[in-house]
Image (cartoon, rainbow, N blue to C red):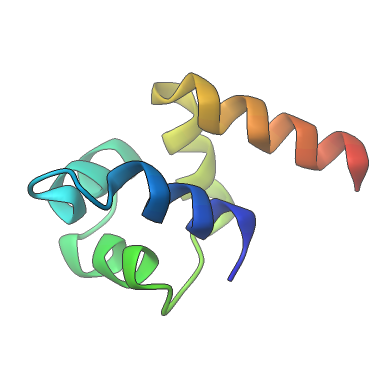
Length: 69
């Protein structure tokens, strides 16, 4: 499980309708977001960038990961 998935699960675990919310922000399907939140799949780059546009903490973590890579 990547840091992106870990973050998404931690942030949205207690949010009602989390897959629908994450799917809307990421501009992806409900099922795709559901797979991210269960740890079954990781977000692709475009999805991660879409999430980063709407979530400052996710964006900061993404930038930090890029700097340390």
